[in-house]
Every structure is written in C-alpha cells, then in structure tokens.
Amino acid sequence: MREAVVGHCGGVNNPEGPAATVTGAGERPGDGLARAAEPAHPAAEPAAEPAAQRRIRWEASRELVRGLGRSHPDSDLALWAAGATFFGIIGVVPIVLVSLRLAAALVGPDTLTRGVAVAVAGIPQGHGTPEALRVLTVTALTMSPLQTAIVLFPASLYGEGLRRAFLQLSPERPDKFTGWLGRLTLLPIVAIAPVLVLALLAAGPVVAPLYVAGGSSLVLGVVIAFHVTFVLLWIALLLIYRLVGAGRIGLRALVLGSFAAGSVVAGFLQGFLLFLAIPVDWALPFGGLPVFGAVAALALWLYLIHVLVLVGYRLTLTLDARWRPTPPT
Image 1 (spheres, rainbow, N blue to C red):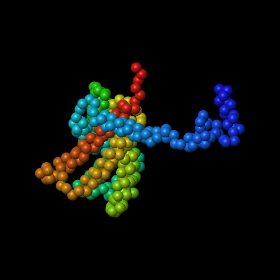
Image 2: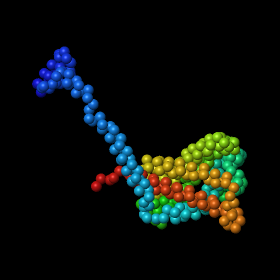
Image 3: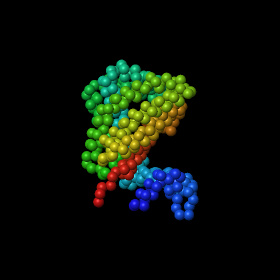
Image 4: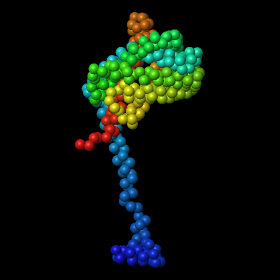
C-alpha cells in the first residue's frame, strides 16, 4: 500500500505526466500512453449485447405464439366462437336498443336522431343497412321504461355466451353460476355503452363527409374512423375481459391484450364497411330469400369477430401467465 501511494504521488510531480508513471520494466516512457490509446477488447461487448437481446426477444415471441396456439384445456376455438355468436345474435340487437335508449336520455331524442342520420349518411347505402339503423333508432326512442327493462334480459344472455366461451380458453372451470355471472357482469358494460355510442356518433360529422367525398378524403376518413373505433373497442374489450372473463387478470396483460384485440377488430370492422359496399346479392345462395341471406351474412361476420375476440382473450391469458410472479415454494 505504501508503494502504491508513493507511486501515485510521484506521478503528480513527474514532468512526463501520468503516462510515464504506468511504465513497467523494460518499457519506454511513451509505451504506456500508446497502450492506453489502443481500443480495449471489451468494446466489442455492446455489439454482442443487442444480438443477445434480440435473441431473447425472439425466443420470448416464439414462446408467446406457442402459448397462444395451445388452447387450455384442449377445445375447439371455432366451436366456441360459434356458440358465442349464437348468444350474440340473441343479445346484440337488444344491447343496441338499450344503448340508444339510454343515450337519448343523456342528450335528448332529437340530438341522437341527428347524430345517427349523419353517421348513416357516410356508410355504404346497399343491403338495407342505413334503413335498418334508422328503424333501430326509432324503435329505441319509442320504448317505454318497462320495455327497456324487459329488453335487458335477452341483452344479458350475451354475457352468458361470452363467459362460457372464455372459460373454455382459461384455467378456470364452469360451475352452476356461470350463466348468471355472465349475465350480471355484462350489465355494467351495457350501462356505459351509451357513452361509447355517443362518442362514436360524435365522430360522424367529421368522418361521414370524408367517406362521401371519396379519393384521398376517403382514405383520411378511414384512418380517423379506425382510430376512433379502435379506442372505443379497446375500452369495451378491456371491460369485457376483466368483468365477463373468468379469474383475475393482471392489469398489464389486460391492457395489452385488449389493445391488440381492439386494434384487429377495429380494422376488421373497416373491412365490413367495404363488404357492405360490394354489390353482391346476399340472398343468392338461399334461393333469393332476402331475409335468410341478410341473417347469414351478418352472422358470418359476427362469428369472425368472435373468433378475434376469443383469440385476444387467449393472448391476454398467455401474457398474464408469463408476467405473473411465481409464488415461492
């Protein structure tokens, strides 16, 4: 220790500078400075570190995809999406009616009617879609409080279908209260649905003229509509996965899983608008019967949406399993 201190102090008084003090036996005074200027071998480590990080991310992504592909327990995703679609056919229209009725109570019937009219003007006019939306709006506005309460029953059945489908993709098991829990947990989402509907209609005056204008304006309208729909679906799916889904899911996985599912479903709905613009007779495969053709076409799209929703839920569970801390043994 004493020699080290003396050597350090000697370096202070050495006229040749600190580099001269690090020379060893048989070295010239400038060798220490030249050796200090040489690149150190550890400098190659930062280049290797990103490669290792990329490899780790790649392996994590592969494991995530494998976990997403493994249904737990083994079940038929298409079958359970079809089951959820069946409950959706029963419950979606009543949910829309209740949402429009409650939205009218918030902003007034006239404001809601104008908002729906503006939004309907921007969507494709084929296949009777605008007229169907107008009929839904008029029907919702004429419902009495008693009718609204009765409509809640078929609307709640949608929650039962979703919960039963979610249980087939989760470690939880169904019980005798599965149906009732699904119905009851959907009601809070139905309660905030009017706010989501009003937010969607608020974008109508901006998006509808862009859709009608066509060209580059149509592209801008699609971009705006996608982002508005995406945000609203993100909120709705987050609540559905959290409330209707079985078990406790961590917030991080819940946010990211619903984010991914909402973005995909939002893009899918833009494709549905394109589908409405295609002049194809839906009744052609059903002998020209328009009712059967319309129901089958809409049921098909509803089924595909449920496939995406269930895949998003499975992704959420997979992320939650990866990020959930392992309990100490």
